Length: 275
Picture (cartoon, rainbow, N blue to C red):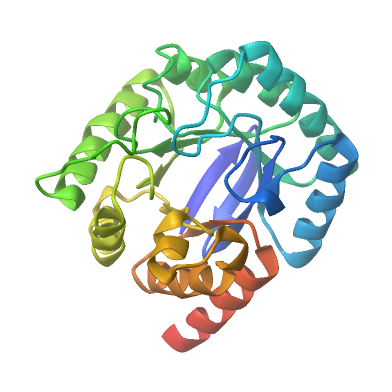
């Protein structure tokens, strides 16, 4: 069981939970996740919460391979009004801000977010770890090789599972020394990894339990699924369920998904199977 302090509210993870993805972007890899207005994001938030999502993850910067980095002001313009609206409409919800910019993290938490989710684990913005420590919120520390602009240009590992584990040992200690008390780890499926690397990580997921941190699995509708099956992201829900099932059997605590209802059904069936 894990207990996370989210701005004075406790988030208890004693069984797997779901983080619903809400992208306030025009160019995220899965078109079904793109929300072009506050009202559209609110509608999605309501649906996800009704279906059982525990966390809503709000992102204003696409981080798909080859995506262009937008200006800080544009990221704030996209995310802050949505976080304010969701926080006001659903005050009991847990909101995370998906950003690698410390100023965005700070303003998002001020607006109502209570978790910071950084694809770079605090590396792309050297002020991020100190900022999150000061905000006193949980931090999702993800592994990424390179940046979204170049991460898929021939990523090479000698042993991907060992190298990602070594990264977490080092980076979670940096987080601890900075003053961050609650850390969630995310192996970063698809971020500077080939399809083969992703399947190797999925097979070895149990090794990350030695870190004694909540383990987030973010593989929903990604290219590992749709390229393997020769389909598109639009048709990758069934494949997502299969890999989420494997992830749960291997120790995942949080499923970050586009499709909340199906993820909760997966959790219920796997939990029943494991009883």
